[in-house]
Length: 432
Image (cartoon, rainbow, N blue to C red):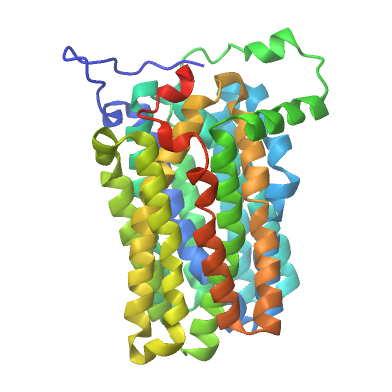
């Protein structure tokens, strides 16, 4: 799948991804969807805790349901994405429309008095299924829109938009929940999906009738074998494997950390929605700064070294939460500082990690490798949510928060003891 993209300038420097109109449409769609999703990221658990009076076990179950589709549907979604080729864009638009309609059911159920945790589980699970499809397709679409030399710049801009959405979205979510209630706040999520569908629908790619070569040459390959190929490629690749290990361990323990933090903030520290929103907004500020400016560090210090150092900073920041019981009135500033540092480190690291995976993975395998990556790494999220619920119930929210912080900090070891730190540039991943 090809697209007409600006080539290198006369100076030999690839132009910025901003010059590509298709990238701008993808960026706008990503930003619109991210704003709505970030509002829901705070409004949804607060809806369960405040509107439906959910227990700690029910709150953790909600997170399990939200990410269970990554275990169940990631591999089939990856095969579908690789088979469709240029049809991936239509798949993304359809997923956006479906998510918008489903999210609208939540406030309607609340306003008509029929909202229940069971109903919320069902809707959230269905939305998550479509999210899996959307995200697997999104990973495979970007390299077809921009040149290889623009991947870091393009991923940086998309990540920065998502971080900016996190900055404003969660803060806006806290304000909306306090001002008009969680059900009304979720309307922003639905609108974001609609705006994303409109923007993505305007992208035009060339060679739309060409089928992927792997389908033409091996059309009879079984679905199980195709899925296994993506998993095998992900776990055996010298650069993808350590990133996968780090992401999986981070996702597992970050769920424990965030669930413990949220319960601690609401039930023990008595922080309101606005204060909780401010904490996550601080993380978004850090992520935006890291994602937007982080690529400038690569040329000076080397690709792999920047990735490792920023992972260590971002993953180590949650350890500061161990001081929460002693912070007193300084709890809110402490949590904001933790999330700023965490955001900067992870914001830079994520841009480099995603670009590395996209560059190192062959085009005909990107859908399946990304699906396997999502299956394993995001599949750890419901496990972490369940573990967090058990820890918070049995040992208390602070204990869950502490266990999560330690686990997140140790995730960096996967990359530290790999070949990733030795990469001087992203193209070395292809040549080595």
